[in-house]
Structures are given as structure tokens and as C-alpha cells.
Amino acid sequence: MFKSFFFSLFLLFSFHTVDVVDAAYEYKDSSECKLENGMSVIFMDTSKSDLLMVALCVSAGSTDEIEKEGIANLLSHILVQKHINNSQKKADQPAFESNFYTGYDQSVYYLQGRLEDLDVFLKNLSELFLESSFDAAEVAASRNLVEQAISNDEQMDRMLIKKEARKSMYWHSKYGSSIYGTKEGLKLINENDIALFKKKHYTTDRITIIIAGNILKNKALGTVQKYFGGIAKTSSLPERLEEPQHHGSVTKITRYSDQVSVPLIEMYWKVPNYRNHREKALATEIYIKHLSDMLQKSLIDEQKNLSSIAFSYSFWNYDYGDFCMTITTKNSDDVDEIITSVLSEIKYIASTELTKNQADAAAKKLFGVSKMYGKDLLEALDCFSKKVSAGNDFEFVKKFALNINKYSLEEVNGQAKEIFAKDPCVICIIKPQSQ
Image (cartoon, rainbow, N blue to C red; front, side):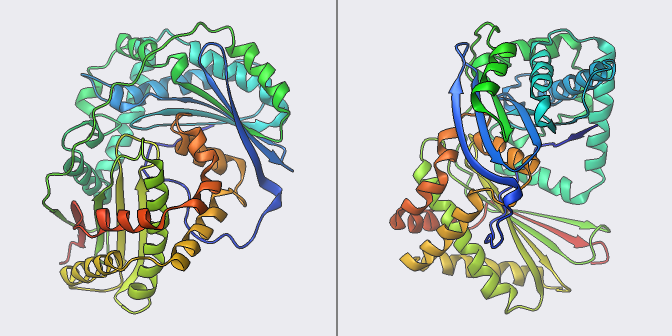
């Protein structure tokens, strides 16, 4: 069985206070080592669990495509299907669940099962990595699956309006294009394109293996060496464009839909590239948590026409960054008034500097979530692998819980003014068709 976790740009840390610690899946520690061929190995040590999660993470995604779009995602589909087909032919193959997703900057392949299956899982993933031949039938079969996913999105007005928002936000680079590609473009991709993309970008220096479970690290490392240590060293650095600042004006996109009964509003802000400025990322995390709490109190509790405000953002581990606020209403007819009210409140909060007590309170909540308590291994690994961007930012993630309390209050307030004192780059509105 496999499920396709197509990249949604939503980080899986839900920023709420963790009140109950579920000791059954306690995340204890993490560590990293490198093989001689350049591959990274990350161990997530857990306790009191008989589950095992193993992932092969590749720092290669749709931003690595040059002429034909959709190759990275199509490759992931083909590799996973190959793996499933080969596994079904083996009588001694253990039961497992296989998952994958492809994003703009990375592709990740998971296997989940029992602790005693580590040897088999690593063998399977090494075969998947070494796979170099593809035939036209395999490409066609996976193409059909991706085309179906595109068709499904085209039937969802919320997905279509998000697509328009990305194009406006990232007009300069491939971050504004679809990971799937287009139906027309997919027809131009053949088995040679797939093989060349994999050979060029699935190199050892862009591979990270993540193992999560109640494991013995030294024994697990020996098994990794057994299947991956003999692979020859290969190298290829990502060539990605620096994203310029937005063009300055607010783009407003409105769509009428019979898929909603009340208006839905999404606002997008451009967030700086934090790849080389981790202290700013920490500061922004704290401020977003504070902003969320303040908006819940000042808007949800006081304005009866709003039912929820939710945030999603991606800026930790990618070459781009954006922040989206989703507002759902109850029965309001005046969407413009709601937008004005919400933006006014955000700018007011951003202009009022956080006190040390307020920042400490936000940092405390983030610290609790960052320990990954109460998560099963599938969610923990999925969260972790996305945060580390296939291993590139492991140290930042590992030390997040320690550093979150060492924030700079000046930086927190500075990020608030830099980002949220400004208008959003894009405002999307979906209104009921009846309006």
C-alpha cells in the first residue's frame, strides 16, 4: 500500500500547547553521521515503540527541472510503483507501508513497519536508489496517475486559487509552477528524461537516510553501511535562483464557487529567505505564535462573523518563504470589511512591541511542540524530514528546542515590523456562487 504525500507547503508542527505527554512514542534524541561517499544518516531514537520508520530523502525536486516540468514527481511515482511491484514478487517480503512525496526542493521515500525489518527496508531503499532503467510502459502508467491528480485539483476551486496565488508570489522562478507539471507537458516526458534526471540529481551528497525507532545506533549504522556504503561517491550541487522581492503591490484574486457556503479568505505574505539567517527564523517562529494567540483573542472571540483563523507557512529549509493566513467566516456578506478589520488588527499587533513575558510565553509553547511528544513515528518522521530538507538543516532542527529560549527580543520585534507591518502580497477570496 502506498499513499502519495504531495507537497502541500504546510509544515506539520501544529503550534499549540502540549498539555499531555504520550510516553508511548517519546522522542528521545537525534544524531547524524556521514558515510565516506557523502551520504548523511540521521537517527531518531525513540522509546517504548515497536514501530520502525526508514526514509530516503533526496535534495532534488521540481526546482531542479530545466525544460520539462513534472519529471521529479513522475520519477517518484515510478520508483515507488517499481518497489511495490518487486516486493509483491518476493515471498519473504514483510508487511510494510510505503509513502512518498515530492516537493520543490526534495523528494522523500518512506517505509514503515516493525523494528526487525530494518535490514529489509534498507535493502529495498538501496535498490530504489540504484534503479537506473525505466521503460515506456512504466512512465505511461505513472503519468496516468499524475494526470488524475491534476484533474482532481482542477475540480477544486480552492486548489485553483492557490495555484494563482503562487504564480503571483513567485513570478520569477519555478516556485510559482506546479510540482505536478501540466497534462500537456507530461506527455513530452519519456523514459530517457527520467533516467537522466535521476542520474544527475540523485547523487550521494544529496541523499539523507533517516531511521526512526527504538534502535541500537551502532547496529543500525552497520546495516546502512552494508547496503549504502559501497555505492560510489557522486556529487551535484543544486542550482537554484535567489527569489527576488515581490513587485510591491497587492494582488487580489476572487473566485465564485458552488463548493463553499460562506466566504473563505486567504492572505499571503512573502517571508525572507532564512537559509543563512537562522536566528531570524527562530524570531519569526516566536512572533507567529504570538500573533496567532493575539488574533484568536481579538478577532475570533470578539467578532461573531469569524469562525476560525489558521496559519500555514514554509520558511525554515527552503530557498523561498511564504506565510498564509486562512480565514473562514460564518455568514458574513461583507468580505472587504473583514479583510480590512483583520489587516488593521495585524498591523496594530505588529506595531506594538512584544514584552519579554509575551515572547517567553510563545517560546515555551514552541519548545513543547518541538520535542515531538505525543506523535507516532509516522508523523514524527514526516515532520522531521520536511524540516531538515533532506538533511541539509539537521543541526538547526536538532538544536531548535535549545535555541528557542535564546531568542533575541529585538529580532522578534524586528521581524514583526519587516513582515507583518506590510500588506500581504496576495489576497484570495472564494465566495459562494449565489453571491
